[in-house]
Structure formats: C-alpha cells, structure tokens
Length: 115
Length: 115
Image (cartoon, rainbow over all chains, first blue to last red):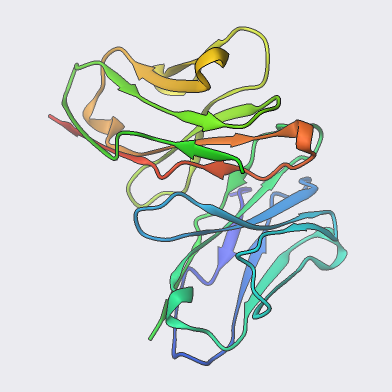
C-alpha cells in the first residue's frame, strides 16, 4: 500500500502526559499537512510543511504542540502535557506540491483519547 | 476569514433517490473547491475537484458538482444514490491567491441511504 500511513492508529493517555504521532506521506509528495477533527466537525488545519520547512501554523497549534519533518520525509506531531480537550482524530495528508490546488491524500488518522 | 458552510448535517434517502448536498464558501479570491467522502471506517477520499474551466465537474462513482461563482456555491449531486453511498461528505476550499494550500473544510453531511 503506497498511501499515507499514520501510527499509532489509537492512543489513550492520561492528562499531563506527552504523546507523539508519526505520519509517513506518499513518497514523492513534497507537502505534508496535519489536521485535527473532533466529533461532528470537519477537519481543522494545524500546520503544513513544504519539504522540511514548516511554512504555516494555525492558531489552534498552541505552544504544547510541535511538529517536525526532518529530511522532508516522515513527520511527527508531539503534544506535551496533554489536556482532555486534545482528544480528537489527528489526520495527516500529503500532496505533490506541483501547483496551487493539488489534491491532498489523507491517512487513516490517529485517534487520541486523553483521560 | 475563509469559511465553508454545509447546510445539511444529516440526510436520509431511499435508494434511487436523487441527492443534492449544499456547500457555500466565503472567500474573496480565486478558489479551488473539493468534495471528499469518508466511508464508515475508512479515510477521507477525493470525490471531485474544481480548479478552473467548466464549472460542472464530474467525479467518481457518478457524482458531479457545479461551481456557481455568483452564489459562492459548489453543490454536490448524484441522480440516483445507492446503499453504498452511505458515508460522510465534506466540502473543502483552498485559496491559491493568498498563497495558502491548506484546506478549509465544512462540518460535513452524514448521508444514510436506505436499501
């Protein structure tokens, strides 16, 4: 399967713990995006990378959130000192990056539950 | 700020009924428009997209959408739904003139097709 993969698929943690999620994009894709989706809502943009450069961050991305994409390949999203409000599905997407509106391909997501 | 509105949150139809899902966006510049579908237990998949040209776009599985610039709308249609169309449908927009590639999603429409 050459689609976007995300690990883990599910994560249950206690409030105050740190968690890290990984996203492996489609291999030739230059752009990588993180979104968050809560129940009854559409995905909300968190941040995006062009190769290894983080070019845009949402105001939703508080100081407790950090994302990296070393070497322009896989990406990690870390949440420090998790709060119950962080419970959500975290989606990763990637795109070729050839133009303005190129299609984003989504992974299956990581469902985070903060107890 | 950019926003996307999907007016129908839940739709129930019988097989062979026609479908129209509304999507309106607010954005002053040139936009790219997308419809994604999420089948139960699966990840988001692209149904169709509009970048430019013919405002009537055809997608996979018999879906089509019409871009009406004057109404800021991009409604999704299907002449005859099947039980397998049961899914959640998301409209999304990005705005290349602002230099941002992130998607702004609507809240989604959950479609249930009765056999």
